[in-house]
Amino acid sequence: MSPHVSHLPDQPILNLAGVSLRYDGHTALEDVTFHLHAGERVAVVGPNGAGKSTLFKIVAGVLRPTEGEVTVYGSGPGGHVCIGYVPQRSQVDWRFPVSVADVVMMGRIAKLGLFNWPKKRDWDLVHAALETVGMAGLANRQINELSGGQQQRMFIARALAQEAELMLMDEPLTGLDTPAQESLLALLDDLQRRGVTLMVATHDLEQARLHFDRILLLNRRLIAFGAPEQVLQAGNLTRAYGSRKILMDECCQGE
Amino acid sequence: MSFLLEPLQYSFMLRGLAAAVLAGVICAVVGTYVVLRGMAFFGDALAHTILPGVAAGYLISGGAREPLFWWALGTSVAASLGIGAISRRGRVKEDTAIGIVFAGMFALGIALISTVRSYAVDLSHFLFGDVLGVSLQSLAWMAAFGAAVILVVALFYKEFLAVSFDPVLAQTLRLPVTLFNNLMLVLIAVTVAVAMQTVGVALMVAMLVTPAATASLLTRRLLPMMALAAALAALSGVVGLYASYYLGIASGAAIVLTATLLFLLAFLFAPRGGLLWKRPRA
Image (cartoon, rainbow over all chains, first blue to last red; front, side, top):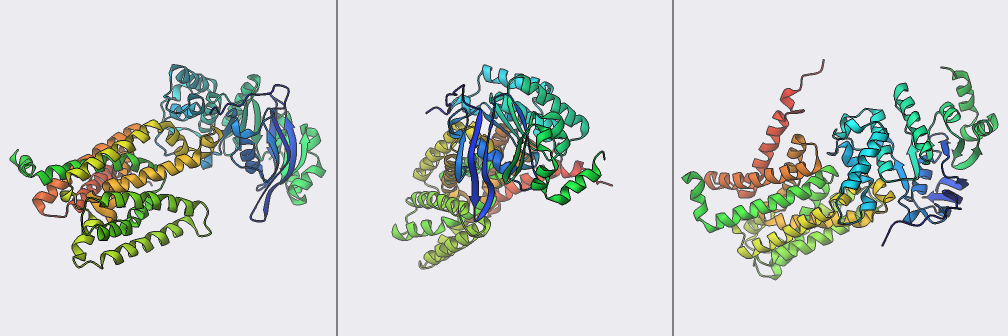
């Protein structure tokens, strides 16, 4: 049994067709349809509870949609190990007794397969991944000794060690100070140059506008998806956030 | 020297020491996961839940001790998977559901044992252990199942690590997460059965969590934590039995008290973060 599903090169890296998720009479996502091209960088924005994390978990194959279909390079996400998920920092047990290198090595588990221990090539990949995110010197640190930006970059290194082609990042910029945000954005540039497709949830519309090729505006339904200037129009934003939020955003810009 | 050697002339003491070390080491290794995954209440509940199975075995076999290991093992594995299923899809909150099952089963066990005339002595052996009464046959089965538990932990080390630290990652790596979670429940169940005669069902949770918790204060890597927990548990078993021999206190209680004392020492004096080295914050 191999978890590695072959990739059809002429298929989009990610395609969602009519995807809905309902549970207990509640609708988390409704009829979401879009596709991503390999190598692009997409911001997923929307109010709290808009279903951003749900969408990511469906794309990652962790949740199964109640309706609709998800394909990755033409086949269902269930067999792919090329999808890297960078969790929200608040969802991680930072006291867990592991080092930075241990966490990054977890990305190799699928490729290693059952009953195999990491070999030199795996350690080389782990160190190369840490090098890429600028943390080569921190490999042996306990994970709770890291700053917020380093924690985020460690998980990106793990996705690199996993050889992920599609990376899903859930609010990676939230709670970071400006220098840490900037170094993370620079790292996203680097990932894009390596051909990694990025889907990044953020609640900062300005960052989405400045740093991403396309914006996916979500509020349970897909409100708009396209170039930033097309998506971030008053009509779309009102549909996503309601009118009050727009007024607040306008009054507070440049804060 | 004779202080250390004197108890060793009794074969029951030698068997008891072997059982205490064996049970301690296995509990500590599996207990490391129990501590890291926050499953202490589950472990406590599971240990109590096997009492009716052990009691039924005791009644059916007419008081013989040999078959009890198998009764404990069967009940323990069944209860662990049952509790696991309840906590995954229940309309009652997980800890409430576990509490109901555990107290109900425990009461059933006591009710069954209370039908026997010599009820008080037998019950106390099941509750608090009877390590000095371990037979050579039981010891052999403990060793065999203990070795199997350690082997499974070693074989699936990296998978258990991923499933425990980051279940979402484990799913994106397409690991069979439910299978590994159930395997973990079975490992805890087998461990409980192996350690039952050493500390009894009521003190079991101490063997599962205390040495691992002590080790977690002293090291910050998983493998050293397991090794240190195992060493601390073995030490607790030996020191506890000597204390039991010379002070005339119940063996299970003496082992658990030793483990608790080691925890307190680590809590106060651990090199990093020990209570005594912490300055009060202004």
